[in-house]
Length: 263
Image (cartoon, rainbow, N blue to C red; front, side):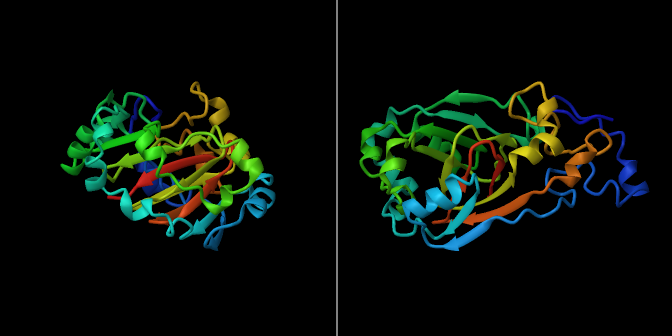
């Protein structure tokens, strides 16, 4: 029996019944195998720039800032209705993925994608079609409304600031577990997310990322973990974070993360 990125042969289902402790979470989604809990520091509100850099960025240490984004006007302003009124978005064509977990499986390499206008995307996702978009905000009308959060209000940080991306989904979307290729600050504008985080060293050892043919991805199907082939997965220290509107999460370079947007 092997469950990889490409296929899953579930003939080892009996192992979970025969050896319930050893095979807890066998052929279930990633995170259901009784992994050791990894604690991630949480604070209320925002960190200021110098403290954020010294205590977390330089230490390559994640942190959750609960409610840090609540003072931002775009938190309430950027609703579906507001974005639909933006004429420029009718011509903005972001990269959009169609997620059908039963067909593709989490971690599948064949997730269909296309480019469509933001107006079309909003219309389709409101109909319940499982869509996800992630796009650099390169529309001037939206760029002008972006506000810099306190953790980034530092000359050194501002000089190295990269892209602002808009991540949008219809809910119930699970991304692949993968290494983060740059420092990321992820703020929840609306809805809820569950995020799994794994230290980069643990990800290489326990998630078999050093043995995958795809750089930065584990070699197994993340919806059905085959513990008879990948037994170390259940030993992976893992954080499971629930983020809500206004929360801000810092994900350091090379940490492995999986994002699950809730319906």
